[in-house]
Length: 468
Image 1 (cartoon, rainbow, N blue to C red):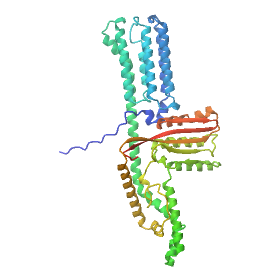
Image 2: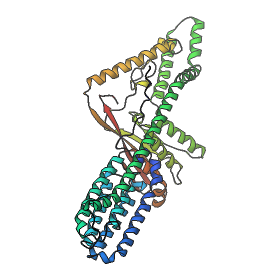
Image 3: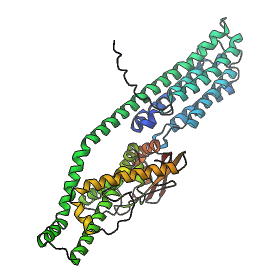
Image 4: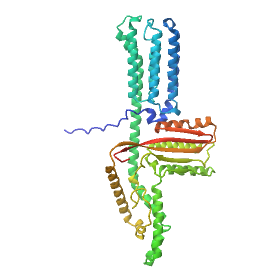
């Protein structure tokens, strides 16, 4: 009897993840939920208070209770705004605390004259506020806030039970009151958990597919790169080598010429290694601006190649922001400056080591004639393999020497651009992009001085055992 192979478990999203964090665009679509829920909460609170005027002893407390609940609803609408993303834990706690304060004030306003628990507006309003947190906060946090709120509401119902018009065991009153809060809170937590896990599984599968496709195309791409380089060499290097072979002698001028050609080839290849996704993006935008009849001057300052450490979400968000700036009306094509610096060590990438150059960042030095010949011979592959092996060995040695720690390095990207737009048009045009940036990066600062717009946001990198 053979045992069936167990199906591998699909990875679950981190407990701190939320829909807004994993899918910022989806978070934008969920924002209308906040004003709709807030309007329902305020309308129901006002209507319920007016219909229960005969039960209210202290009208002042009832008015204050409705006012506090209105403040909680207003805070929800403000906190869920796309341009203020992400929705932080402090905002959620403030909303729930205001809802609980409104509940206590409403209970005090009808003390000893409350006919029944079912028509109290505060528990239902608090439950709806918790329901509106589903797209913005993790499910465990919503569960904790809902459980804590339900406990306070249940205790309040127990205290009021001797004065209620229906004679029933006090525990039933507590259960009824707690259900009004727990039911929406559990629905909110279940929605958050399911949506977050679905998004995380989809993203994981997409990354695996991209990785598999990359591995499949690695071989053909390498041959294409070699063919492209050989084509470039054909203009100068190959005719020189053919001339040397025809003459069957090597003069001092030939050696000098060979060193010059080797230096030029090496400089080109090193420049290709230092090329990042940000350079490609700015290059495409330069071409687009030139096609529109403009004369662009887009500057990139990333000497440590920190752009290579950005993950796919960060690259997409930053790239979308840059593309949006270049397409806005009033954009000055000579004003775009993108700078990346950081507080930690520069990222390392041993997979991008080039032929016979060792670690990235090594200074190009003049080569001998044997180096020039090796570029177009079979020794090219062997030199490349040796360089990669040496780079990995040096990286492992560096990781063993450095102390083992789990630290965070911060890369800061700064974008400066001149936009000749009125402030309200500028805010309206950039609002959706800034909401995505705030959901992806840890800190986003927007500074506007007349036409000059400055965007600054941080990207955290985790350093584990000295390897980034």
